[in-house]
Image 1 (tube, rainbow, N blue to C red):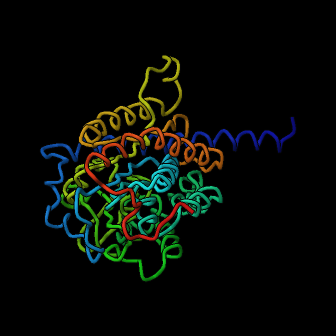
Image 2: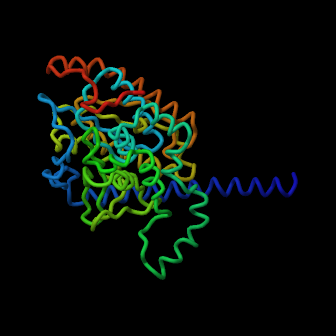
Image 3: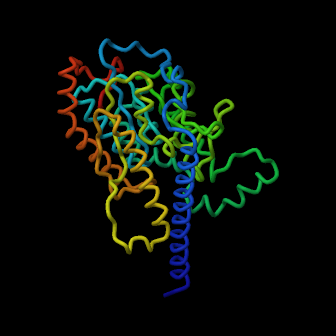
Length: 361
């Protein structure tokens, strides 16, 4: 084996170790923040002024009758399943009056509320543009350059903690969404993104103001992306406290909630699997999510749970995105008959997404 091959092999091993290291740091950060946010306070929407949650801006008034909310959970690349679920619900004519999301669920829900079709959303996953904006700096490069980027902070102290800013996501979203829909109040479907406010330690529903900033804040993974300052508040990924925000949808006035859960299924794993670097931290995060999300899912009327097992949170593989989208559509169609039967009993029309002009194409 020549010297060049040896160097390539060493670099490959180093890259794998760096990625594992970041996964451990992110996982530990998530667990710690979950415990901190739950200490001495409930993750009830009482932590967010109910009056604020009920302000849905200048959106068209609700139709008469029960209000239906779609809640989209966080999950990184696994959130591509939301695209498939939205496509199925749209084609089935399921009436949706509002959308609430966390992290990737907020990104997909916010874009859809702005009129971005499911076909366009799928293209954004398949061409890699969405995930590149979410993770615009490769993990190995982020770690390799971290000392250089941290050095200015020791002098100026003008940056928040994180490997990179994450502004690329907001700029990407601003390009995708028409300018007249850049404010949440103007979206075609009433919408709220959930984020954790580091200042008061409470989950917030971001349901007004700039959409790009709200989605950047809701998906700012602690330890990786810098927190997002909005006014005098500082926000990080809402998934650490309210990953499937059914409570927020209820506080916004939803009578019926359809929740889409893109967590991996929690099951028994082989003993040997915990010898891999980062495996314990990853398992703890999976357990934390399964436990906290179960509380929210019990409050939902219908749960769509695509099989996204094995798809990495920050995977950029096209096949993973396609697999998740297909799983989302399949899981949604399995639940749609129950949804439509409930709608029939309550005399809710199947007119589709309210006054939005949105279709699956």
